[in-house]
Image (cartoon, rainbow, N blue to C red):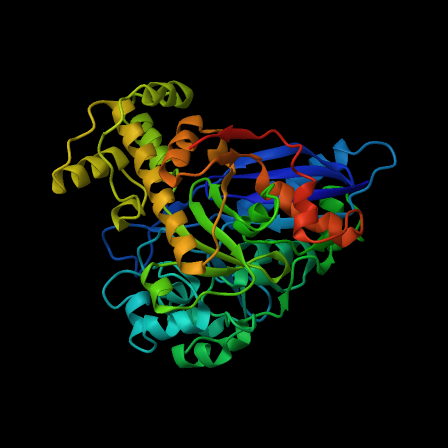
Length: 482
């Protein structure tokens, strides 16, 4: 048996998980949980009317250290941590100067700076049209992709940058002092060549971006470094403890933990965002794929996560926050049960409409879209929640059918992993919308995938992704017929 720490950071919360892995399976123990949300900060260039959204990464690092201290306290007699792995959401980054100091607080991808007239999207596409970009990086158009954020950067700050580190790489740097870029997350930047898996330096030159700031790439399973002495002293872990690269894009780790048998499966990593797609050996770069807004992101073991980003349970969580801010909070379990009793045939909205991307009053935005499209307004909170779930399931169904059509990979089953796998109404509606059986679980797919890659690097388990997935079929799973 080996012992691993999986640090899993989401866009609304983070966890430090202790994983004990053996050839027979994985036992997870949540050691530390903490909240995470973007902070609005007023700054020059923020547009005057609204604050810019940033991540408090210094606090996140402090929470990780607290979690590692709790791990050290939790270990049994004779146990030691064999490695630490970090995953998080994609695209957001920190810039470091020549001395390794952070140049400002990292922006949140929900900030609107890239979509303003003359902002990051316009600045990129005037030099490289999206049709060409897709052939180079294989990414669907999302206005917050890293290359658009970089194009919207303060030129003075960008000129001072000597290293660009995505969020999990930045945190690993603070743990180890080693500046590296893990490949699955690097694939979401738009700056990685989708065919070679290496940085596209010709593209960065055309965009006027500092290619010298791009760190060396590491692949899942490679060691980034060991703990700095002051980190070891702060956590109680030995300085020799390695930090190992995992699928540091949280979806890459989640897909490792899809308990599928064989290749004929689709996956939905369901959380704040929903990532819906199939796993392939190589990218799909056709015009049809680009028009359908599908992305080719890197997976563990060189696989391609061919998927579409769907706005996800963000609509539900923001609705709950809106009602809470209005002074009338709603219990999630109770409102989901009430939504299950709402009759079929209610309104459906496009969950990927850009109006839903920023934080704010989701119920009002949903109502406005229904009115604009001539659909009936959801009457009451249960009906509005049912509208969200029906709309998500419809988007999942379209994405699965498009993935099958565009990739040529038919699927027999849809695996839903992550927090959304606990939403029985959504899983039932997804089975109906996709016309395929749904297997829901494991809930902690990201942490499980993170830990399994570490354990394979340590030699505790061996084999391919299919072998790793076989260890998870004993996890609690729920089944829904179409």
